[in-house]
Length: 156
Image (cartoon, rainbow, N blue to C red; front, side, top):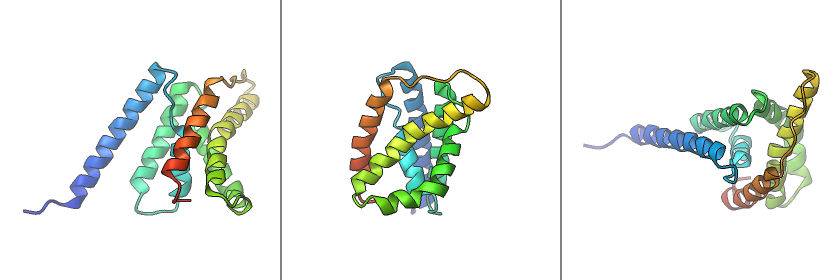
């Protein structure tokens, strides 16, 4: 009897979501472990209009929301960062840069630095204290830049 391919897709999605949850837990326990937020942000940017990857796209958004909650950022700040960058700056970045690695580096910088400035803006609006940018973020940005240039090389 032949197995249905939908069963394997749901199994892959289940194990992928369990590994994302494990990554979030381990990232909160060990601060030297990068969170790979830039990679998820790039995946969302690249596959936002693709209909067949909707479940993986929702899972990536869920990971970014849980990252906001886990690290003490404002809720949905990654979604706001994504919406602003996607609607206003994505085409300009793709037209301005011709090298694929430069585009990927820009996406990672937007994922981290743009997210930080979005949180600073929300903190300013709410008259809260501004979250400081730690030195670990430079390490996270560098790791995500290298991995993004390897993983997403032919997909931009």
